[in-house]
Length: 466
Image (cartoon, one colour):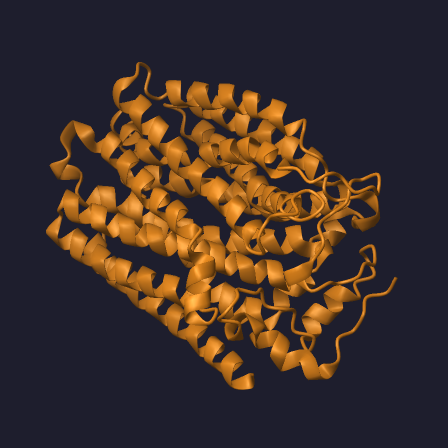
């Protein structure tokens, strides 16, 4: 059945519903006046379907077309997403180890940290297109295989730089699959008939929290093993490989949420285009904020440890692990508060997050100047809170904009933009011959403030239009 067209008079209301509902949190509706979104609704390459209000959108049905009983199916998916995130971030506390044991330069260690972006962005975009055609489950199986292969290469490659690069790229591709396909799958499993009790925001909060816990706990366990266990450059990867195999047994039991009649009907490479990425809210709200999501995380647990490294001695590895846990743990704890922040601010949780992030970047400059390990912990908490607020509040916008057919695709575009920020530590490390961290972070703070202003201006326009 063809997609219904909303009347023109709903344009302004649809564009501002996110901001105006302060009594009960509601997702923004699609802007019917946006040409790009209208194109996505009439995209002949995809199987036609109706576009319900996202605030009351029914959940997926089983591939057989029959409703399944209400379950907590998303919990069966959580171990796989958790382990994919673990594999993407457990390298972070090992930067000092690779500089000392592997004898790599600072820029090389930071390049390895950001190298997985080379695998992550294709993983985000290609995997999402393939899952829209073939379903979520087979692509997630591929993600676990890539994560296992990445850890295998990293465990073997301490003194072989190119092997480490390939291992990091494979880990990145696996994280990309978790973030696009896994997030979309968990969002669909957080709706009826799979979960009739889930709140409106559960589809954004659950995957974001699962990934954040994987990022944080994976780095924490790796830091402990690298500091005190034998074979510090091997043992963390062995553990990850074993637990990844365990997650596979849970994944087998997860129901497919994208039935055949709702899948894309053409080749996956023709499905890479995501028309709803041109939606005004995406371009003017999500796009300016997205790179700071992992830009904040990168500064907190990649740049900040380097500013106090001389004071840490042999405890540099475990300190980096503590910073990672503190940053991502704070982000995980605050994510459940995002709906309340949206209610309190009229839907402007994203500006709250960007404000905290700008302040965090300013304090990062101070931390680089005073070189105090204790003050760096304060910066990590603030940047972690900013990360947690921004990743969920921006994802809520994404899930409201996306049509059912391009949910995975638009989620992949969003997370690709967030991971641009993870290259920030590499850029700042390359600039060290020209500018110290305390100088370059001033520029970072200015750019972050400019993004905040851009998002706030668009929110103001949306409010005036209402």
